[in-house]
Image (cartoon, rainbow over all chains, first blue to last red; front, top):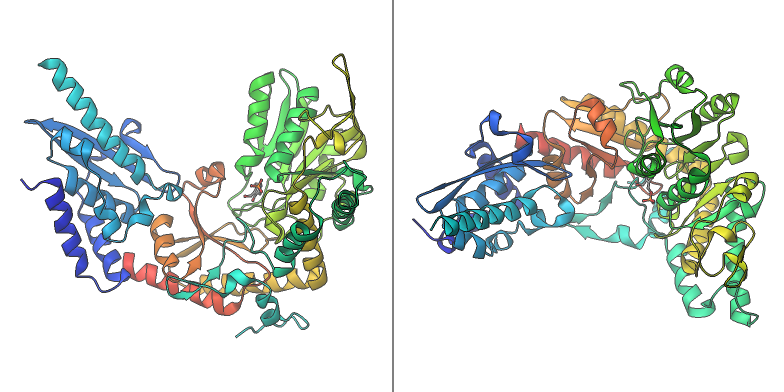
Length: 144
Length: 412
Ligand SMILES: Cc1ncc(COP(=O)(O)O)c(C=O)c1O
């Protein structure tokens, strides 16, 4: 399994192929359509991360010491970016997730989507992913 | 490029007054269609503020020295100018605040706390800005009162028959907006006031969008309170006002405590100052007030009727063109509308649409526009909103239409 940094680098390379913003967004839109979607039954209040502009749902589960995420959003671009974040963080150890700085978003020119004024739910989604990692880590420590 | 049938309205010259409009965004000329959120400032306003700091800056109402006298005079002149602009009977009926939000909070926490008691009711409508919902909700929670809501139909118009039926012996106040920032509906505020007065109930009008779109006459409206923001009428941020009928302001307890709002202070007792100073504790935003005055001069020089005619023309053009396009739904189709268009592009999420439109250099607003209840009413997460101001052009609307076509192409 590739590390977080390696996966970030992969995405950066993919984005280097785009000539203009429109190609980039077309790719995000494709991604938004192909995200591992959460079951409708999981789109409940407790999995909802509310942005004022768009809504994001996130679920997480632990398997063999690694944390896995699934996500969805009502906005396609938000969903595309959520998918990128999930691609990078899903299947990693809680420690690595807690320490990830995720600066690839900046490098592929999508940083504006992580500005809090956008309030699209993505900033809170990252926070929530790290919370999950901390919670699973604490639970594991207790079990040992 | 700047065609308009409004003779005497020199759009090209007007646009030169606004330095911010000369820039590019994402490689395209900026098209600013977020005027309902805030308007851009002409040089006349920017210069008035700079000049004030260059030449007059000093505290008002406090000194006999030359500068203080000059600053106080300019400051009080603007109060008078605002009073004239909205046709208030007296200039002491104008209280300076930070803006509409603070004006509403002022009334809620002074007049409201004195007059609204447990079990009482306050009437608002289903198309209010959060600024005209939350202060009343907070008051209700504190004293044990409750809100009653005037329903709005699908066109975005208030149901006045239902409104009439909301009155009872528990009603204490009606608080409604003049023009909706989300749908553009120009509400029949005069009639709303008449109905309230038939029931002996005072009315507060949220005029944040009223002042920028036509003339306001508070004596003709007969409302008890009218709230407004300078930044929505081409003035600076952080300054606005509250008009209150003399009798009401006099009976209201003060808002905040501090300097300026008192006549004499001992540790035993404080005598409050006269209106409007009673509500203006602390050093006011003098530069903001001066800038606000310059903004009113600016729009009055252009002529309120001319501005309105120009905005109506833009609005009519945009609406007609949008209606020709497939898959566009305009949200809010009131018969009487100001230059605000809320729309949906197919079932494309407003956030997605706004992101693409931004890349064309067009600033539109997406989301619920701080009016979540009306979005819930329509069962939508938000809209794309274009709101036009005195400097916008038909060419700019064409850019928006192009951007919308691109959105349809990319998400379709
Ligand atoms: C209808 C309406 N009411 C109130 C407000 C609040 O105005 P301000 O933020 O200037 O206090 C706004 C501005 O967004 C508005 O459009």
